[in-house]
Amino acid sequence: MDGEPDLCIGGTWRHASDGGTRYIVNPAHGGIAAVVDEATPEDAAAAVAAARAAFDEGSWRATPVSERAAVLDRVADLLQRDKESLAHLETMDTGKTLVESRIDIDDVTSVFRYYAKLVGAEADRVVDVGDPAVISRVIREPIGVCVLIAPWNYPLLQMSWKVAPALAAGCTMVAKPSEVTPLTTIAFVHLLDEAGVPAGVVNLIQGSGATLGPALTGDPAVDFISFTGGLATGRSIAKTAADNVTKVALELGGKNPHIVFADIGSGVAFDNAVDHVLTGVFLHSGQVCSAGTRLIVEDSLAADFVAALAARAATIRMGDGLDPASETGPLVSEQHRDKVEGYVQLGISEGAKLVTGGARPADPALKDGYFYLPTIFDSCDRSMRIVTEETFGPILTVERFSTEAEAIALGNDTEYGLAAGVRTSDAARGERVVRALRHGTVWLNDFGYYTAAAEWGGFGRSGNGRELGPTGLAEYQEIKHIWHNTAPGAAGWFKG
Ligand code: TXE
Image (cartoon, rainbow, N blue to C red; front, side):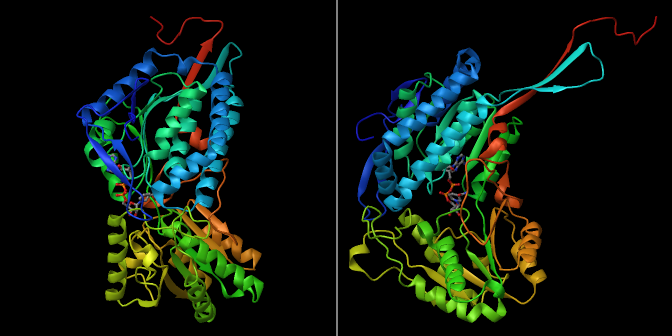
């Protein structure tokens, strides 16, 4: 960063082999936040080779689990020691508020703590094969060399969901953060070194996914690819990986329904429901894979509910994430704001009714940043692309229903399946609906929360595989069955 080398290959920090760099922009005002090395495909290939060598010849995979767990705990300690500086970097890079960035660093810390504990408690499974002479064990081994590709909305958080279980399992890896938001991952890899992760175990590459992708995901030396990002990119990575039959886990976002029944109640209950729908879609300006971007609301409640939402949306305070008065920041880049603006124009041309927003903020203090007003479209239906495609911006669409069956059908009518919310005061209905929804996470009378101990991932085209929880560790492990005969005799099949 700014003169310091940003690539880490085989334990050595270095610049790009062709001297290439990239400007990192602070989206709150468009200024240059940093200059970061931009790797070449040759650098990426060198990083994969270094990870391969560290796996095949290094000590990490054979390091006792208790020692690996201790390293993970030290990483957690260092993350807390550097929490303020990491949070500051994350805000400069992504635009999110400092409060959110601090929460992110706490969450990253808890992922390391969780996997330190989980891997330490893992035991081999003993299988009874019906022969007392045979000891049959199912054991877990590290899957090998992992390529970890993260997006820009939760840069360090998403990377930690991959790095922590990969380290816990004993893997080696090449990490590639988004080229838009690399800053916290650079600082983090320095912390891993300080915590005692051996050289070559975590290699760091920076740069454009399109340029580096083939070298990272098409190399037969890679055993596993974990990717979080857009559907089109995930699809292309899966195709490239298929040539080598490389295992791939994909988290590809969502178009998440938030279903609100008219039985939610009035007064505080009504206000709380409005508050959760508002937060669910406009937090981090909608740049959240699980954002509740589709409000599916019961007919009889819809007019009041949408009016209350619009009134609240118009009061959201936008600004530089470093300003404590800001409730939400800008979009991550000019290019991404162009995309969001394109979707708003599309919604209008598709016949959706613009209720609020639909423009950049008028405040002159925000004119150089990539801000966009919280936007609500009413009178939406499933024929509109604004309802079916992930806009990844502060856009809420409103659809209405009159029966529970219709609500469920609408909630499931998406190619994605990452997350959904249900609000009702009827417990039996709540249970019926959460079970009927085909989404990886379903919140009942809440929205947006997750924990390191519970799996995260999607149904349908939201991807495959899971992060977090025990399954998030299992992704980084191979299963080996050891059949040990303690009283060997003849096979006895062929008699002659
Ligand atoms: O993502 P990309 P983009 C969605 C969201 C957004 C859209 C596009 O809808 O508008 O995706 O965003 C790397 N081989 N999500 O273009 O391209 C890239 O460098 C290997 C949802 O920014 O998917 C970055 O590190 N890697 C999402 C990462 O992939 C490649 C979060 C993500 O970038 C590559 C972000 C290639 N060929 C966007 N091409 C979520 N699931 O939360 C790019 N990359």
